[in-house]
Image 1 (cartoon, rainbow, N blue to C red):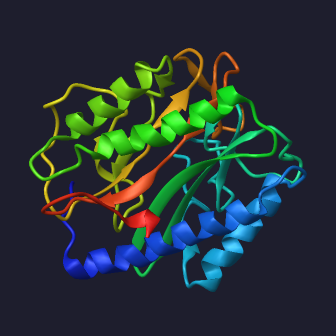
Image 2 (image 1 turned 30 degrees about the horizontal axis):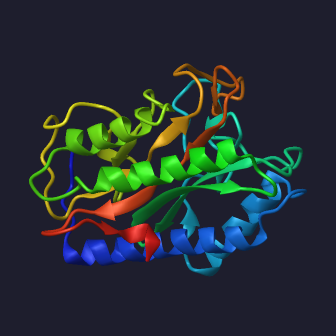
Length: 256
């Protein structure tokens, strides 16, 4: 079910989104070769709690029998890991790594969701281009996130932008509505046909998140039950923001 948020509800979401953005600003200052992903995770959780929020992904159910709930604040996925990487003291960030981080903050009944990909140390030109294309794909998509357009208009714009540059979007995972629940309707694929899907209305809040791979389209799930990787070992990147559909242009809540 799609929920249209009131002004009061949107204001509450703004605060969760503000904290989400703040965490990324602080991560950008400290991320470096030699850090463990667990160290980065604890750093982020401390900032969230200092600002009165909670890490919404921590304890999130897998939905699969035998796979434990997600144990951490951040999803940290490195190089060929696309999404849902589990932080660990044994996983060390190295010079040249492409580090994708996904974070959801919960505060006062509402969520803020965003993802960023960080280039650590001396990275390849190939990696730099991948990360820039992934980020730009988001901005291409939200050009169509306006009143009266359809979900498919956003999806088509993202997929077309990425594929014209020789990359592939992940098709098995997608963006989503967000609000009181982390994942709400509608689903927002990163590919599709323009003019299809639900019509956009003011008050809708959406998490739009291109996930892009340099190599082929195939992916697989690690034996940990969470981490999703490229099948051919190629690099991937992830960029996401929570946006608000308005009477005019979309507002990006996690960049304020």
